[in-house]
Each structure stands twice: as C-alpha cells, then as structure tokens.
Length: 187
Image (cartoon, rainbow, N blue to C red; front, side, top):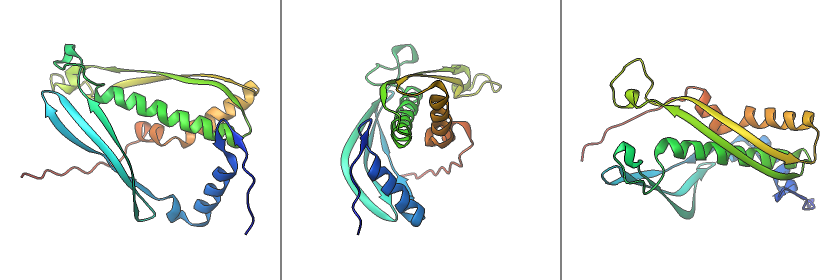
C-alpha cells in the first residue's frame, strides 16, 4: 500500500483531503452522512440544542458533545442569552464557507493569509407573527461579503469563489428548496 506524504496548505492536510475524495469517489457510501441535532425548550424563548453524534456510511459516530444556546433579543421578548435562530443560520453559513474556502484553496495550492465573512439578512416580523400573509416569515434576503487575502491572482480567487459557492452545502440549502418532513408526537 502506497503512503502519502503529508502536505499542508492553510492548515489542511492536502494528501488526506485527496485521499478522502478518492475514497468517496470509489465508494459513494463513504460520503453519505446523516447529521442530527436535538433542541429542547428551556423557558420563555430560550432553547438548548445538543449535537453529539452523526452517521457515516450507516455507522453511528459518537463525538464530543456541543451545546448551542438560543434566545431572542429583548426587542423580540427574549433575554438575549444566546443568538436567535436566524443569526445562527448566518453563523452556520459563515462556518460552511470558511471550510469550503480553506479546503478548496488548499486543493488549488492557494495559501490564505486572511479570510473572513460578513453576513446580514433582512427579516420582517410581520411574516413570523402571521400579521401579513404577503410577507415571508424568514429571511427576505441575505448578503454575504467575503474578505480574502491570498497569494493568488484575482482570476484564481474568482475561480475559488465559484468552486466554493457551487459546492457549499449551506448555500445549496438556503438557495434551493429542501424537502422538510415534520411530525408531531403528543406525549
């Protein structure tokens, strides 16, 4: 069995990335993941979400537990003990894009010097509160600005951007309709 020499770009092990891509290309099941989160109401408008396992290729992988706190700003009757759900979505988008840029830049041999994202979205509470059926309950629009400093030409960075945005799971979920199945279990 041939061994790969470790090569790191942007802290990403490019050889391991290439190996993972080959393994998934050889066996699609290796790239099949099911992620889970469990959210419980605490009090008032507060919720706690626990994330501690996922499935890969049909096997459950137990990881360290992550806890996310959610609440609303005082202006929306919360106590601001944590970000609200729409803010968490912006954070998730930024996290997803960070992974995409770091990994794809590494694969393209582009060394990042600085990378950050500014996201903002417009929500009209008339939709959420059911006051106007013509107003969406969620984001009306989201703007994401990427700030990047790297050792590459503008053309290569635009190629990187196109690659990241076309493969981002969160951009896909936000910009395309994702089937959502809901169930109500009365206990």
